[in-house]
Length: 62
Image (tube, rainbow, N blue to C red; front, top):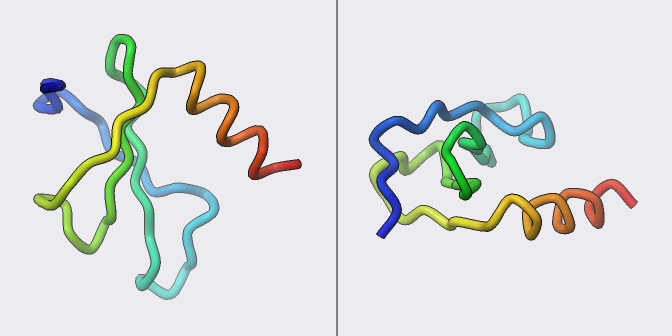
């Protein structure tokens, strides 16, 4: 399990501005990028390798 205690969460620039559908990303952790739902910060977290996250975000911009 990944230790997320030092994660610095930031709201995704792709999240809506109405406070509803927000995704938070923590990319300050060594070897992992973590993603969570801002409405449920204690809920499940998805984790990706930095390379997989780059592929995913590149596909979203394409």
